Image (cartoon, rainbow, N blue to C red):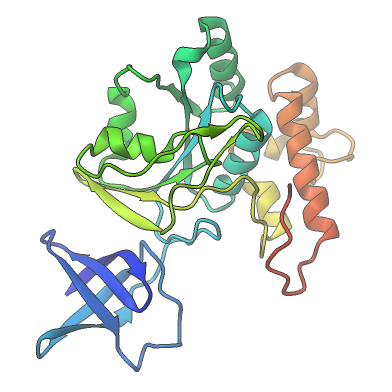
Length: 294
């Protein structure tokens, strides 16, 4: 039977079958060591005697590096408006990473009750002009029905640093889970890690991934040419550059740079792109898994 891998704890794999039934399984010896299984994988599972065994892995449509989750349909990038303050730089990095994998990105600005309407409009307009949808949520505000509809029948990964409200968001969808949340460290102006394991939580017909928070983008294995092509904010302009292989850095008649000069693409978004490109070009990894763009 076909199952979705919900969670991994040591060598125990929690699966959910197409009937919504959950079961624990281990990996068959013929599959062990061939490919690493990750949350979000679809696997074939067989019952042998009183035990379940994972016997094969279905083809993935994608796999994120960090958080490590497969077959993602939607990425919800969460960033607090206050405590910590909204970081355009971090949101830009995260949505560029999501774009690279061909996953739709939505932005949810949390703690929106702590800022005024002008500040909300600034955040909304910054991303909306590039085609990214932005939603807001406050402490006592209902989640947008439009946002809830986006989640339907999707595997959704939550992206964002600690303290921006990822676990709180899941608690609002599933109060019965009562996931642990924590206060902000005012010394560092960032949150404490409260999520320790990677797990998919069922919400109606959607699965929400809550994985340990992170504040840097992991660029391990990123293909530079593909990265340049996949940024959603650039799609409307790429075929207008003079050179087909334009990197949008210093080439003449670059439509991306012209769009930046016209204010159609925010300059700070473009500057984030240049920093990531430079980082990729000067760090070829050589198997080092710990080089991160800070």
